[in-house]
Image (cartoon, rainbow, N blue to C red; front, side):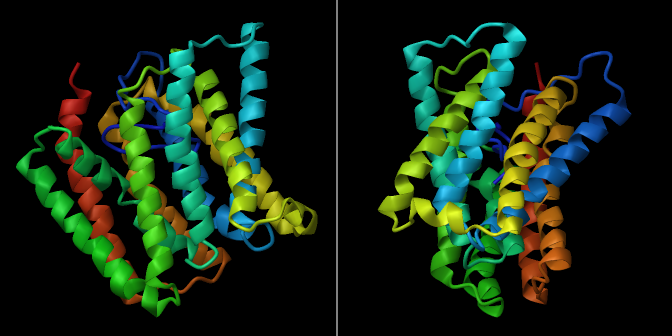
Length: 325
């Protein structure tokens, strides 16, 4: 799941963490550089679903996800410490917030997707996760926010697409409703973590905070692994392609994409940044079909298109409020 990621309009990143999508263009960043950074986010986060599917071939899902985030978190924390020449300092309340958000984003969100992708094609999982901004809107509404009429229309349309995909789309691709619902719950968990990340006291040092968040979330997943019947010895039987995919997820899906995302957050408006929310699933579906040979049915395309269009409607309707100073 990619996929700090993000609260508000578009959702959360695959790197895990919590910031707000309050991008404001600063002078000095060319349009070409901004789109290059977004291109990294499109491809890296869009390809995480493919990577998870390959990891799941021979590595237990919770264990694989936990190792991925612990490796990425350790490398990011080491880089932050060397760059600043001191270990990051955080208050106890901030660490507590990171723990809550990391459990929701990484253990519940990414862990759920990793578990389900053993039985759900990567493209199908990506389309279901694309509904995450819709869940954020539901949470905001329950918390007292008053969405615009266009936003509510997008919300209704989006959940029609989700229902169609779960009830009929998975059946045509051999995915059971129960495992697809796991992905839906994972998207809801990610949405709740994203929403809370903009309301809890978080560290001012976003990079270091994200690194610690990944370490906490990764540790939780590693502890959960044996509780779900996984064996730590599973890594010893991992195939070469699964290990390569795990390394790709840690380095490119988490570190590189997150760095590009944080950079572009400071240099582009939310309406431009939020495009990743509906480009990523398209990338995931295409890669799943081309590399893994996943079948794309007409119903899957229709349901996915409904979800992506609905997310685009919601983001467009909410973007002016997010872009305002």
